[in-house]
Length: 143
Image (cartoon, rainbow, N blue to C red; front, top):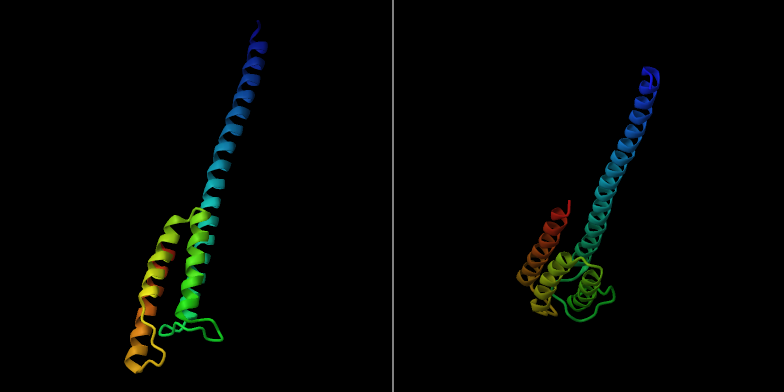
């Protein structure tokens, strides 16, 4: 085998090795960025769901249990959160469901006060802020 043929064979081998290395590297990089993108998307969905929880807590009247036309009272919010916790568990977001269930338990324990005085109204609003803070803490944990 002459030196020309040997150099040609070595070039072909180098090209093949380069192609294999390039394809393998590209595949690994693509897989890695796909996983990062998927994680970011899942995190965004979870933040969105928990933001809806925060919105519902903000909408409710924290001293009422009976239905009001807007359906923002404690009883309606309890039902909404119980359903949401079930859905979150079913789709695999158990940590999110757990915090929703914590807030749900506290809402269930909140007193029904048909005609609250100013102090009771302020206490109800303070509880509402703590519930919102728990949801916000979970949202921050997803970023």
